[in-house]
Length: 408
Image (cartoon, rainbow, N blue to C red):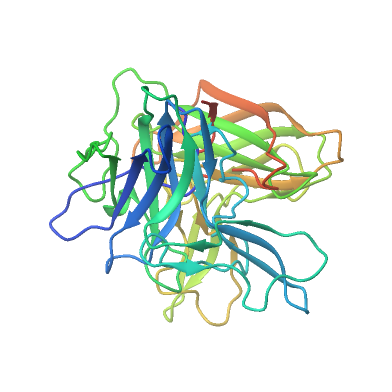
């Protein structure tokens, strides 16, 4: 299974209460014989709209990612204006499956667009684009039933859904907190005019599921070096961890060569929580490599008595900020406290024409949720280079599920 989508969480669960639902529809012959569109509709009243999407599509000839996004400078003051599914490392290129995209929940100051898949809207700057500099926009004016892709297929051999689909929604307006599989989000896939839902490939009645171990399965961690993810001469490093045979990333150590700068983005938070000043320490807080140092490294604190583990890193999106906020006066430290799946571990720059590469990789995962026991991973996949499509000035999640991509 090839899946890409950074923030993203695999679908769905049935609970006694109403659950957020994302419905993807493959509309055949939408613009005439041999054409199709993919739309997303998100339930109302239990979430604040689509934050990230990812889905396998098979049997197409061409496919264009139409997830709304804009990126440029606005008005006479040349104000940066970047909205929509613009996260470089998640957005899939033309003619690639999985189709994927994510809003940028990581970058400080990034503006979220709420209500995708629920209401129509317009992402263009109110005062128009600034004169001169180039800008990028994809479907800036969009409908309530959100068009995510259009394409063509051989007549007589219609496209269909592949093995997997993911959908993350915002918990509420004004928040970057995402809801996904772990929070009971349901994902349906339809084909029109064939209207029977394609069932969730991972049915699970538990709204907060813990993967059931797969007998004989080998935990696998896939590290990917994504080139030009934030523009020419930039890169990101992501980690995706297999499901069902472990409880997520516990430690990482990656040799990286050929970079100019590199920031360690392994999620961590350290400080005091709320008005009671409760110590709050989560994530990769130990043996953490400094900026511009290789090997890139970090580990969770499995030694200190009472230390809290963060499970399923590299498998699901999450948030390690204190529920009640940080205490008002002591300083706190946080790095990427809101994270996606796959997990972004680093960003950096490199000399144009001389890209960086991995030199070695060591990793460990948790045996199971609730345990500090760790497993050394025998199966580590390193994907040295995934070049990005210059036509979008973006990468393309992970998602959203975005470590491996395949050409249709």
